[in-house]
Length: 145
Image (tube, rainbow, N blue to C red; front, side, top):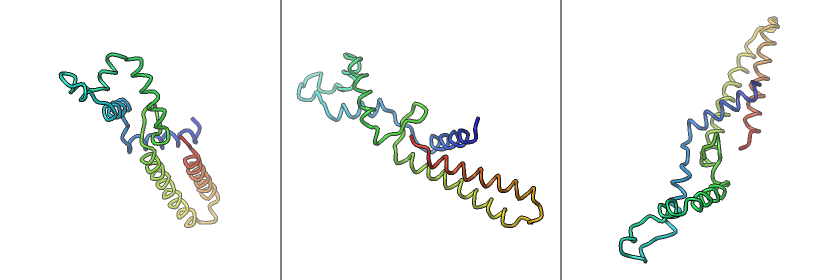
């Protein structure tokens, strides 16, 4: 696996570990139940859940509506690994991960500055590590969802 792919995989794991997945069906049900009511019908129907009625009586319409609802949330939600997460939470977790990489880079730079100039093998190793860490940071910054 190329290094870029590895760091993106680590970043996505960090994000999914830090953020709570959204249950899109529950969010859709809540939206339907908020918009519609059987209270005006009265009787035994007054307390029925519109989302449940739609899901049980018209399952195809329910699923199509769910897909449309999820699509309409594309500005608010990000999909990672088949799960949806709030965009602002994903952005915060991504930035937190990148900040950790930057801290590692700073630590490496400090090591580099303290290295004996005559030890070229060590200098070359540190330069490679610095370049690798910079590439990881860039890959994470450039990754879009």
